[in-house]
Length: 402
Image 1 (cartoon, rainbow, N blue to C red):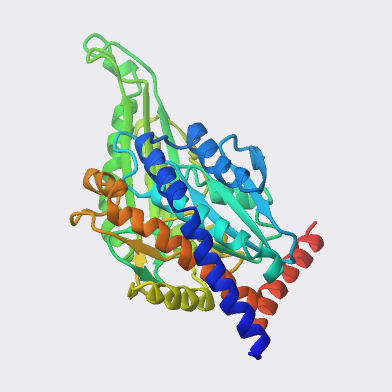
Image 2 (image 1 turned 90 degrees about the horizontal axis):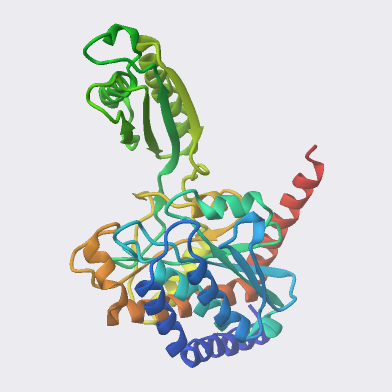
């Protein structure tokens, strides 16, 4: 690295940190506002509007409703050839609100985007803030990826709230089905033999999958929940509805598990005479593959802020639709830690910690660290060239596809 590049990098690192500090109050206010008004998947209208308005007021060009998702948006600043995306999450969980810390995640990405916007011309980059709905349900990032929102992106970054700072972890691939068994109603006392019992079908399916679990490899999980299985005790249930969710270490393992679980569901239909309907629920989430350079750059940045991320390479966390993005382009998804009282994601105590002083610091530190990663990528000639070459390869492959 020559002295001119070092000077540009040092100047940019100082400027992005200053920019995040300048916006400190609005970033913390955004995190608190998202936390106070939690909205679930595809209902995040106020959350998306709040998030987009901050960068729009800062001069970003905002496009709402991208890829056919009403609560998604894209906001861009700059016109450099290196497009760096920050993924902003803002959906909450039903009933328990922001028990996965997406208010912190979203505000941190906004802060990083504002930090990088301050040096976009200096670095020759385009900053692209992507508002990504429905991570907790149908996988907004996967749908935005399919919709072309990441087609010009060279690298995608975000940080996720957690009880600890960590880098490098993978995640489980995940897929889900909405399951319906349709039988035939009959009077449960006078002529039960004339009915086809959908409750029996759902019971057999649940039992068969339960027995299957012994033969599933480590890291492969199946969860189910029954929404409906009859309405009157004296009527043979003619409809049963459930959702099955499968997780595995890789997308290949997920496909293998899906075939086995499907056989269990079909066997229940065969045994009872009920008809089976399977519908994919949202997009599959791929396993997360974090970029080594981006991870190393984030680690350096976090340490410069007084944090010491735990290296979780080789370990897996739950599931994220950032995995889909990471299969297509260089991606970063560390965790940013604060005191959650010992609670883990998807628990009410985790939600209660989401507007604490520790969570506020996490917003600002993650914003600064992510912006630092963008600066390192833009000023490292070899890594910048690598990411742009990968982007060019993707475009050639897409152009050659029928």
